[in-house]
Length: 101
Image (cartoon, rainbow, N blue to C red; front, side, top):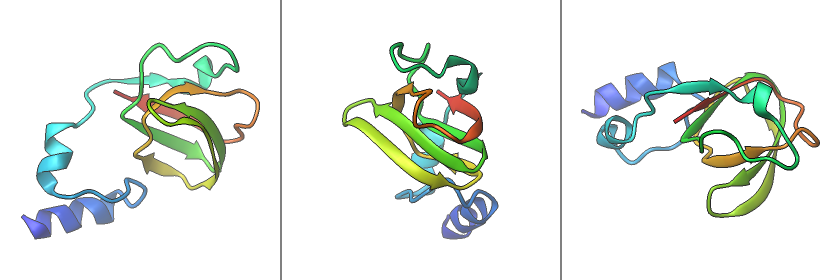
């Protein structure tokens, strides 16, 4: 089990820390949508995200599901465990943003 988790994490370095392979399988997102097309300073996303994929490095300003507004600076390309309900137009420089839910 540890070998499978290490292999998965090495293949997905932007995924972030997880407790176990089971955590990845139980809450694995099954759908995706284009967050770049839904960025707004006033309107929430059509779906709350479980993870966000960043295709182009940059800042990402979001309203977290339970934690207020946060700006992540210089996010690398890859998957990030960010549970967001809004992605702001102002303050977001990252590109090709995909939300997984």
